[in-house]
Image 1: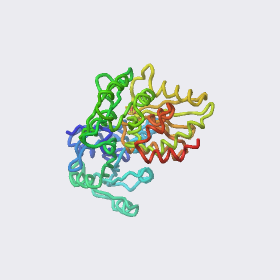
Image 2 (image 1 turned 135 degrees about the horizontal axis):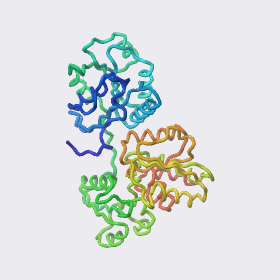
Image 3 (image 1 turned 90 degrees about the horizontal axis):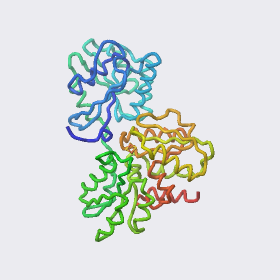
Image 4 (image 1 turned 90 degrees about the vertical axis):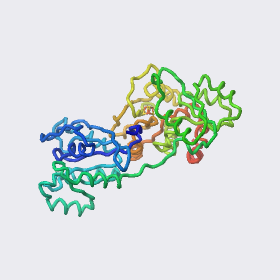
Length: 408
Ligand code: SF4
């Protein structure tokens, strides 16, 4: 199986009411009984994820979810998890029971999926029992594409997989760094190995930057911030680009001569997963913060907080120092993300390397919808350390946005 990072794979969610056969269908897709199947409604509680190669499409992640008609207090929580799964997925398979008509919950689910702009297909399961023609009429009148299968008889599964492969959204090819360098260019990556660095490995944005640089046949030099001056002095010519961890931007900004383009991994991620222009716009809000304002700091992965943790300690400290205001700061991690953002005056989000582009885009959309400016770590940290506009210079669209804001 290809080793594509989970967050880089197309995510497909199986959603629908309880007991319509979501888990059975997902098992049929995978070709093995990964998910427990039972006639008892509500067997699937937390979302179940499985990576696979969906031929002829390629690497995907399949997600089985709890029923949208789950009951009780726990059921409500499971439903909200299912809705969260939708915000990260690129495609939805809505499983229906061949014997029933569309319920209100299913109609609402279709509306929710449409509002999230997720392509989808309805799959009518249990076709071995015959298909309720009123259900088909409803789907046709709502212009919902559908396909019928029988998980029990293994009928229609192969053609469904083929159909889904054909209609899955094609990956948007957004470069991380490969458009900024070319063959034989030298790119210097600054990777501080501090307490926050994971043991024995590099983090995903660093690995992806190295890989993309090698893919265009450029020459990669990796150094810690302390060794940067020495590394630069050993190069015959100036590198084409220096990319640093945001936390070292102040030192690196001082050590890298003005004529060498400089940016941060997090700013590269802003463009790759997020919306760099939107983040630059969000900088205005840092200057508008007042005593008592609430700021949300969101990280898309969970890790054990370090002594001088970037999200929990450093960014709050820099924000308070920069604004000289007494701010109230909330932290969220992983898939936890508040549904109501309206109480916040600003959102500071990490690069989002561990979540799908779709989910990062949904978070930005949610922020815009709630009228809350959003910035990412790289843009905000560079700004608070006086490295903006320099760190934005490689990106004309970001500089254009910055020039519009310069008055503040
Ligand atoms: S998900 Fe966010 S916090 Fe976690 S490694 Fe990626 S960029 Fe850093």
